[in-house]
Image 1: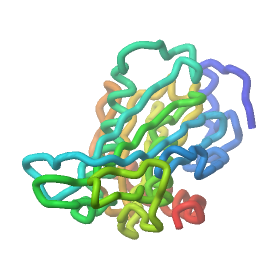
Image 2: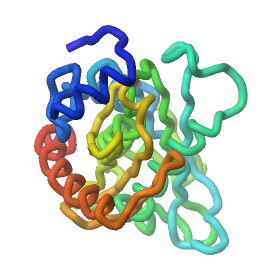
Image 3: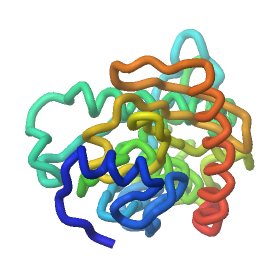
Image 4: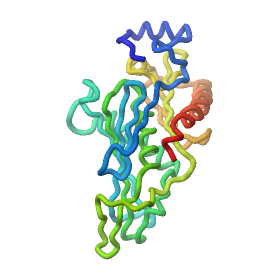
Length: 265
């Protein structure tokens, strides 16, 4: 349901009465739409829409030397571009602080959850491994790009296939894929961002709600197991606040996973 622009004061008034302008509960996501396989060049791809917010996530793979501290593991890199076409707030040019933060939060969720079995992406220890690139692009920014990107990342990874590798030439045969998927574990990490406005905690904010958010916490978790956590904005949180946030995250994770589980097979 689309809503016209509303002031922060009106939003706060509604919240005091336990309401949001679009009729959702505080712990309710907007309508979620997911489409996979949108790129015929990527190893895996997904388009995710949360209400009017839309992101595209692509997964690409190539070969490289492993990092010196992990000679038997594949490499992972996450990048994000907040495109000017998605909001007048974004400008062309070098990556902004917001895009760097978004990429790092999703990287940390995927990496710390060990969602990808990087050891299985080693071709020859110390010499050759698979690189995995997760690229995130904003197509329409109407609040909560973080969780849209997190959903897109895990869906794209679960649907990605490993490209063909020619052992004789030692090169990737781009445009041809094996039947083998990227090795991921069954525990699905999801990004849940909780925003605090006044004394209220809510998820999946519209842009107007996000604009008046005093602070936010993004948690990467699976059924109560926390892998990553990032606090944003300037206001502090009490111990009681964190207890509420953790309880809300666990509750919301179950709802979100149930809704998107069909796209994770």
